[in-house]
Length: 502
Image (cartoon, helix red, strand yellow):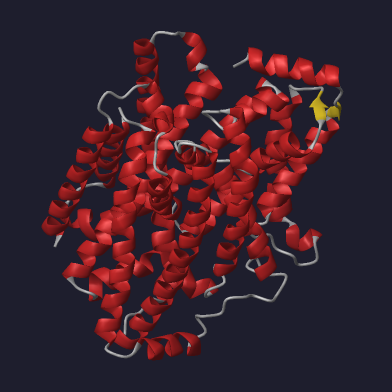
């Protein structure tokens, strides 16, 4: 089994390098950062499915059905509202401002301190979030494949990061737009085939399987207890804001959208992608319920994973120990696709953010060759940091990763949300710019205090993903305190100051 999986893994990797060869020929910095703004919108939309789902959705969403039934679908409903907001509010802003990094908007509205602060919070959030997503893929492969071959986890991690580094090194975002289509295809194929194989193995009609899910209490969609973290209104609102910040205010996801030829194509991409994503998430929840029914019918004991909050292991446990070799290979390729589709975009997006938001690559030198050299050195440095984060986290995995990732997002994307709301919906001028980073750091610290003591302070209330909204509001409030009403003179000065830092 292990050797077969290695052969499939090698063949899949070879396919990625073939795509890289075609897309990275005559690549320039414009190719790396913007894809020369020539990507077909439907290719971007399809590829973004895999990038949005990642290994976390692939593993944690089905596994989490054991804990929270189908209530994750409330988050998915919120996604639709979030994508509509991105298509109608954020994409027009980005195309109008003609930005490469979305955080350039903060510079033009609030100045360089806000620009760098937003970029740093994005880099921190993406580095942690994507490393956790990639770790989950490595963790499963290590547990079920590479441990049996005597390969240590640091070797597995290093190998996969090197592969991603190499195929994104030259073509950047142009390569990723096309490799994402391959990865999405394999991920969805794995999802659908696993459902088909379970139905075949159980040898009972699908309606009967669903009835068993319902009888076992797995199909509950809306939690009506307002004090619980997965209360349905909190889920919907949180899903909306999670989408806005983790897609609309995220350089990784927006960089793909900004490769489209124009705003109209980018909006088509976003709206069609959002509809497909709802269906795919529903299938992952269905798969989670079917895995539990299958385990019950086949006498597979999953209680230990549920009790120890390691529900990420439910899907691979059933596949590798019960569904056979073909399903295992399909699962591994789908999982690898999920991991690659998350990590490759992150390497490129963080590199872009460092080049444009922190280093100011276009102002260091006008020499294209030197710019390429600097960009490649940053790309390698980001890959090393990514690898180090994965290895460090390998010692602390003790919960469902989708919960951890959304928790991290609540703390790190909150300040970005607050700064963008201030930039878009107020006409005030920042008068004490050096306080912006202080407010951005203080806000998540205050949220951590609220989250820790919410039951005592708020009559038993516990925060879920809506902590992100609270974080953004605190940041917005702090920015209002260090700003004043904007007049025409202030506006001209701010624009001049922002442009001077570009």
